[in-house]
Amino acid sequence: MRTAGLAAGVTLAALVAGGPAWSAPPGARVGDVAPVFTLNDVADRPHSLEQHRGKIVVLEWYNPDCPAVKRHHQRAKTMKELAAKYKDRDVVWLAINSGAPGKQGHGQERNARSVREYEIEYPVLLDPSGEVGRAYGARVTPHMFVIDRAGKLVYAGAIDDEGKAGVNYVEKAVEALLADEPVERPETRAYG
Image 1: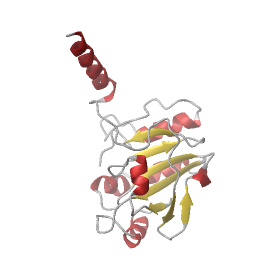
Image 2: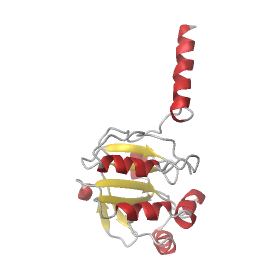
Image 3: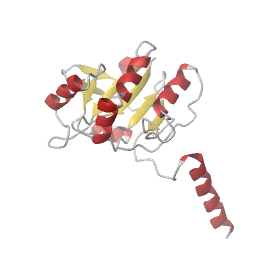
């Protein structure tokens, strides 16, 4: 009985603290060193995570044809505006498409076209094997990750609270890092 009460209390605390309890997908964990990678962008130029050491890095898992991605790129302009806000503050924004051949939004041509369509000013990297996506545990698009200047993963989850309270989790994480403060909410459930 005491164990059941404790479990109910933990579940209630999780609900009060930020929604239903859930398990993070396998992959990189907040607090760990972020998995390093080198991927080519849509113009076939290589980009490595290591080249940005010393800067804050935001990773956006991306599929140009996903309705949630379209909403944030076409209508709300969430990604474009947030990337632009921090562009001159040593914050690097990288989009990564881990779509396999034959899947929605896959391929160099489709992603290059989306860069023009959505007026994206940061690199869109291609991960057709899905290796980098698996290393991070990216499961949906957009799935967001924030890496601190030392290369440690400090945030994983959704871009925002889907308009429920107007909270942009990535913006809060980046602001905390810029102020040399801990990220208040290091994990949320990604949607897409």
